[in-house]
Image 1: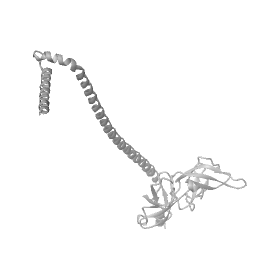
Image 2 (image 1 turned 180 degrees about the vertical axis):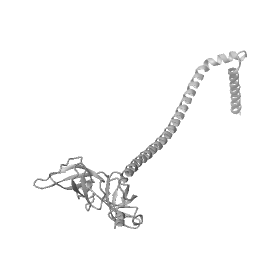
Image 3 (image 1 turned 90 degrees about the horizontal axis):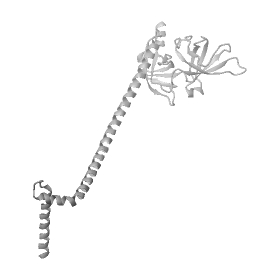
Image 4 (image 1 turned 180 degrees about the horizontal axis):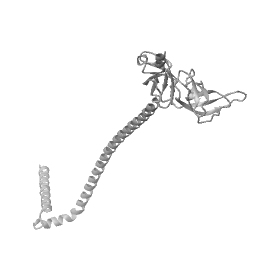
Length: 280
């Protein structure tokens, strides 16, 4: 009982002292407790300073982590905006390229009197190159076998098979391809063929070049119009190498097509077959 009573007295005394101290610390300057407050503030001043320092550090730490979180959120937001801008730039670049191709193709088509039809490539044979592929137009659209196929850059090939809603196209790099061509500078006639070795690089071979014909690297090659297959003046490509064999009458050249046969998407079919049918 004495222990409990003693402890109660201690607690009550401690409470009274704390109340007195608080009253003294909060008393006004004119209060009688002001003297007590001044006496108490001397030993408590370092403690108050320590508490204030700790409090300031805690506040600084809280603000620091809050700023980190805000910076992280702003960083994430900036990354999203940057990705959106990159997507928009890609879209603008793609639309710009498509617009340029359409302008080139429109200018290219104006030189032909024959009717043309735009087509999308919907399938191709295995491999990286478009040696042969399928387009989304067929006999229903007036396409015939052997109709020439072009794109905005030049000659692609010809239609080899026609179905009702689709057609098969053989490109000029295919080994079965043969085109009556002309050197743009000298106007000499030559034959452009697909080659088993060169086709893997997307290249063609220019055969039957007479020794008296002046040919140079960089010379342009175009369709001659001497056959019923391809209209005159369609750009084919340019000569990148000349190969002369000793003891042979003629030599050949390697041609890089104007068309990139690794990245074909849309093509245009020139309806030569329909025109021939009308003439007959």
